[in-house]
Image (cartoon, rainbow over all chains, first blue to last red):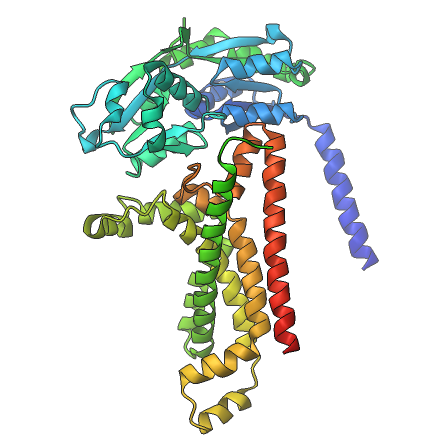
Length: 253
Length: 225
């Protein structure tokens, strides 16, 4: 019994000490960026094969809360600049380390094969044939937050509210649409581009409440202390990365 | 306190869904356990695997397959939608199904253990005296396994009220419709409203404690009589 106990202890200790030696950097990005981040990362790895960068994806609101509660995230990319500003205000990163990453727009899409042909414009979602609208959670999914603002701006929020099925990520909204369980999904234009053969755009809006929809990137104070994180952050802002972003449809100034 | 008008309705929805699913899983769990114990062929292994499927598959994966199966384009879902115009996904029915499937294997496992441990002599004696299968089940097996029924009730209620992954997938997360307390706590935590999350968690604990106390009282009454 004692022997087994010591064995477990040794394994645990060696595991912990091992983890301390090899510092990986963690990059948390909004779900909409999955495909493009993988591409950018591949380009980075070509020249820097020995560094270990962990990419993780979640909804921007979730990542923000993880950082607020002390998660060791070196670089974050949010689908909403407001979330980034909140972190800067609360001292998790210096405000000069918060930059715009790319632009996007909100689209309302339906399945092409459903052929709801007469629909066009956000007002048309009020149509009685549209029973369910898949939309990101207003508080945590920026695409959902933007959609809510668009509805309020157009004065149709109250009429539409009861049709909404909330999702935890933008991609889940797309999945609910593609599996036929919702009639309309509110997603980013770039999400639409990932499966555009099957989707039809009903409405699109790139400016909400007079402001452009921008994604932001930030290097946290934890990341600033790490050379690899700084290097990766600079790479994400470089022209090489910008080129990939442009190719994937993330419009840049 | 929370004044968003959702507090009471969320509690009522949670209770409605959980009590209904607990009832269903208790009935089906007991019946399945009794059936499978009596099956002699190797087929019983497959049946058992099917019932306990939700135990070894991650809840979100379970929910995903159910969505594909019961959704408007799914095999079962399209049939229901076409002929009975039942829209299963994103309804309270789906939430009940989610909790039911999650707690069914628990009831099944507990009751199977009880049914297997019975002295065959008792059953045989009843048979000789002319009791049929139904009579043996209702008047002999169930009373003998009443402890098992009560702990099944307790555990299936607990599993049901805490159900999250499957519910999220197939019932959605619609406030005042399918959003249970567990889902609302998740929502609140994810949007950083920790205080409200604490209140809902406290309510969940309180509610569960009350129900458990109730079951305990029944248990005492039964064992004293």
